[in-house]
Length: 243
Ligand SMILES: [Zn+2]
Image (cartoon, rainbow, N blue to C red; front, side, top):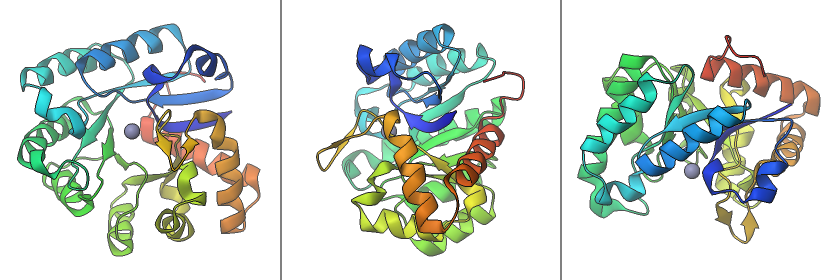
């Protein structure tokens, strides 16, 4: 069994979806509409943890009433998380102040409902961390972490997680993170179906990513797979549901 901590499942094509037997997927959404799609997928497929949210890339098109719609989905789901939510100063710095309003709202919601946050923090790693601390968020995953190493230490010591993406083979700064991070705080993700430097990311790349990471860290693949599995179960807290 493989565990993908961050995948835009609602965007995968039919063929890719059929190939996901043997995978447990934390399926993130980008807005209210895709959150509803994700919920439908999770009702149909047992191996999906639905995550609802408004991506920082699209907050400019969203109104604060979206938060209430997302809250309805969260309050009616037994197991779920909030995501993809967060802050981004790298690709959409122009909407930063609106992003902060949304992200603070989602952080508050996470605390209120006791659900984890699946977070995007490109170019805003420290800012995201500060909102998490200020809001007393207990569980957060900073996906595809490429932030500073000192912050990595700090946030994993606080109990927050990061995820490693198949792009580690192509992106040096991500490989450096993979080499350094405390393995008790690591998840693995695809961020599918995003494309990175010509590489189409899909959950199917997870086994290869585990191999690369295991090799880099001097572990057997099965050893690492089992660490990642127990981290995933702890993070998403699905003891009541058997995968
Ligand atoms: Zn994503």
